[in-house]
Length: 336
Image (cartoon, rainbow, N blue to C red):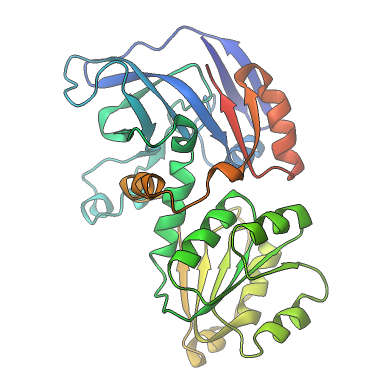
């Protein structure tokens, strides 16, 4: 089979390898779609902990090819989505329903081979069968949707709150739609790319603004007292420091975007204390796959329009160039 390998920072290749053998507790899936993500770029650059060499890809769907003899819930031909999270199940965090914080957490595409391959072997507990109304293409987006649901659920949103959202990539555009479903009265989306902002406007943003030297003046005209909800979906350290300028007293800040571990921001503890700010971090998804798939069934979210590019697995190098350019929304790789 063909598979993409990240051999180390800055190095990848497409190789022909043997189809994986499965044990009695594993399932082999014929991968259909796998999504390219900003995290894949961070892995490639060496800014994310992985076990090199590895087949990347943590957002994928496919069809069950064969199952181990102990598998009871899936059979050949089942259409499935994959929860990327690998957790021990016995540490304090796993037993506190915080699998995403597992002491030995791993994932498909980082510590185990992932979805940029024609076949992938996975554990039964990481597979979810698909309703007939959910396509395999949509199912490849359940991971970013699950991550977004996990983040939004941390916030104490009240009907009538206003919000600003930095970042109009895949995650930002999903967060935008979830915020509108939760009763936000006015949502402003900020990005450096006008094309992405145009897409955000079509998906329901009340206001879209280019992040430039006049940003503060523009936002003051929208809400001079600041915003109840302020979210970063960029992972950009410069944006992180801007968040505190715009949050309303008693407001909430969500650090959602993935930032390199060595980055630091300057914040005022006094501002947090005196203004009673609530600050949240949101990492990955935490048992949110069922919620994501149910939202897909509901058809209340527009996910198809987020797919800006599609490539065959053999054209992964072209797809990766577009990812690095920052011009894409969601790139899907057809692995068949």
